[in-house]
Image (cartoon, rainbow, N blue to C red; front, side, top):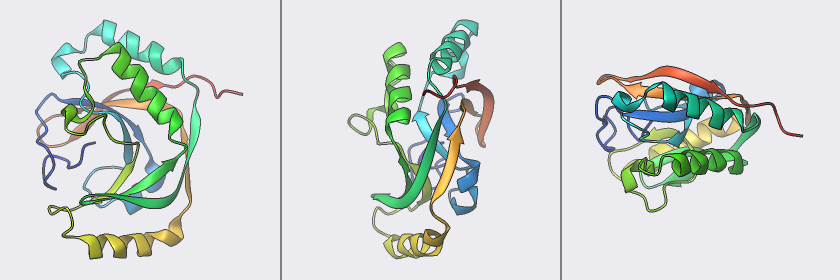
Length: 181
């Protein structure tokens, strides 16, 4: 769910009990080379698992139910230093979910505040240790997978995942409300 699943790719260290809210995109799983499943992060980290009582689950369920299901399209690749990602369109529904969660839990700062204002929604395909060390490999992946695009995904739920020390495990999923329109 993060830049690296367990810090294998040079990202920040995940702490046992960290949680994240994410959107699974199984349609993109064949493209992902990070050791985790294809997903878009809504908020990482969320609250430590020890803080997730029934009240938090009820609030999350109500928050996500108030947002309609939506469709994302992945038509091209983008880059952050050391990261190749699929660019989801439109971004607005994912950004709205992130804003709503951070408004309700302001202490849950996106990406621990490492990136001023967080990152735009993205689906990580590959990560390298060095920011520019795998540019050629990322270019080759983009060329290889480009013909598989566009990918379309129906988003009907947001999952809460927990880092258990060896991987991210989905704890619960929260359905989105009915599609708008």
